[in-house]
Image 1 (cartoon, rainbow, N blue to C red):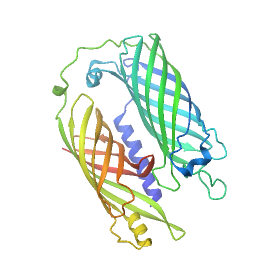
Image 2: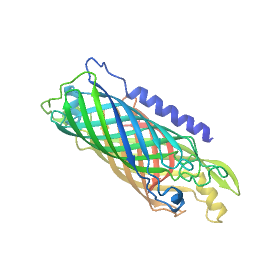
Image 3: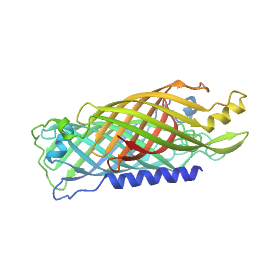
Image 4: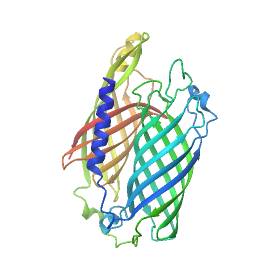
Length: 364
């Protein structure tokens, strides 16, 4: 079950990227290549991570980015967005426990003030990660951060850019990085490591980045109010009397989203979850085996064409297991047409992932 869920997640992720991103003609859209050097520290958010408390990761990143500078792109956010990919190598400064990592990310980076010497940008990325030293009960028992070779990294950053000339761009960034396998296998406390990075980008072709006349964003969207109905599926292992079994998680989400700016929407929603893992836990603890959960959520959507990145804060209104009260949700959705959507979601309690799911649904 777990392997089939991982395969499904990878398929949806890769298919969504292929559908949602098509490299443009570099003779029309400026193409940049860049490198960054990172240095940071690991956040110790659990007593189980004491073995890695003095770890200071450092890494090198290479990226390739298409910098959209046409009027249509500008009027979506009053900015000039970049889309592309990065490949980064990480030394987690603890070879015996955390080992090394290799991340491949899909990136979105809106630029503000690109026509000036100094500009600001914000970057979000997600993708796939390979880490060399997963947890092993005998060979690597101290690694409570990850237990699979393949994981799912997330990255957020804010950047100050300095234009040396039309082709060269120097950048200084504050980054937040997270690696987790979505609790597909335990232990999975994750690696959370903020970094500072210094980098430089070279544009193979200089582009024009003069702001265009702003248009009324409401006239460029089909509707301001949207309703999302999504069915999601996950599967997790749970240790039952010393023997691990796989359990299914099934859920349904209904969200109302109202677009309030060119790229932002606020949303509220409700979701119901049927978690067979909780039923097993409650059975072992001789409690009521009601394994249903209901939560209400509120948050923000970043809307960029066919892609929606969402972040939500949730509160359980029905939770018989009563281990947690609050949770968060992160994820992305792709609109394959006017009706059908699909994507990946991550549910977390604080710094610890609860589960990663694949979802399909409709938008009205």
